Image (tube, rainbow, N blue to C red; front, side, top):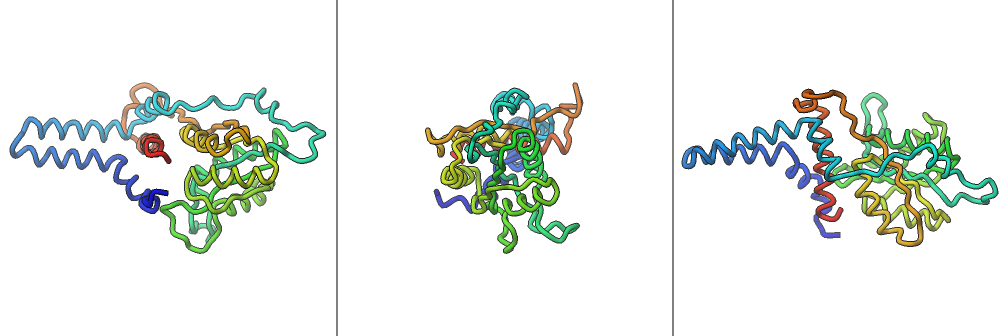
Length: 266
């Protein structure tokens, strides 16, 4: 703990596009009075960076170059995860890392999962059906979320898994606030329960950081297998990938946030 954890959402928002590029353009506009060439250069650079920050092509290039993810599990990999029939108790578990909660969804009147978290849960449920392995979920309240006294993310996922997917979650970890805490608390919980092999489910862009955290916590006591999902797949081709879009803006921010988190040790 560094003492800065409660400020992570604010600092992250300030460090991600478009804020730095807007500040660069403001600086360029100011310099136009004394150094017009430098000011114009900064204005054009800021505009170009804002453009690139909203392109899916930028996100795909950044992910493949700076955040290469492990390949998805193949059919053979999934078959190899099936436990022996004679195994008295499961020693392998499919663990989902939470991706955020909605404190109170207006349409349902209760807390819900963010789309990223629901996508991870859905993929984990499918793996559980294919392998027969039990499910675990790690997620409490993020640093930027208000404690409204409602359910934690893991408890929401448990309810959705049983009600909507008809697949129970055996272990829930409800206190973690970030990836490091996901790893520390979940490894301890599952190791105590006799689990020695974790099949880790999260988005492909999050997997490198998640793997690092879980392997550091598990050491030699547990095996960690990556089960990435949600790879960036370009919706458009050719020049359309390099035109600004809401999808591109979101994907670029996701990749840059991951790089920032890795750079500061989170």
